[in-house]
Length: 132
Ligand code: ZN
Image 1: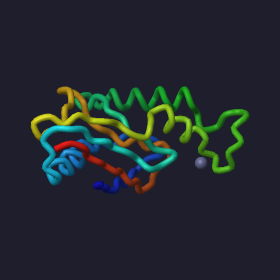
Image 2: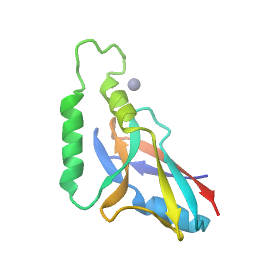
Image 3: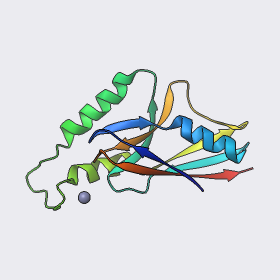
C-alpha cells in the first residue's frame, strides 16, 4: 500500500490528488487492474469529479454547506462537527479507479479529490493497487 499526506487550509475544501495517485501508480508499474483510493478519516472523503472548471468544486461545496450547516438544532455530538461527519459519509471514504495500459482511466474533465470537511488538518490518503 502507498500513502501520502495532504495539508488542507480551510474547513471545507477539495484538494485535487490526481497527480499523487498517478505518481503512486507509476511507481508500482501496474499495467492493468484497479486502484482503491481511501481516506482513513471520519470527517474527510474521496470523490472523482470535474477538474476543468473550478466553479464546479465551488458549487459542490456551496451546496453541501447550505444543505448541512455546522449548527443545527438537535445535533448532540460534543465536538461540534456533526456536519463534517454527515458530509464525509455522503461523499464516501474511497473511490475505485480502473487502470488500463499503465494509466488511470479518467474522463477528460475528471480529477480525484480529497474532500476536507473539518480543516485545516493534515490528512492521510491510502492507495492500494490490484492487478498486473
Ligand atoms: Zn466529530
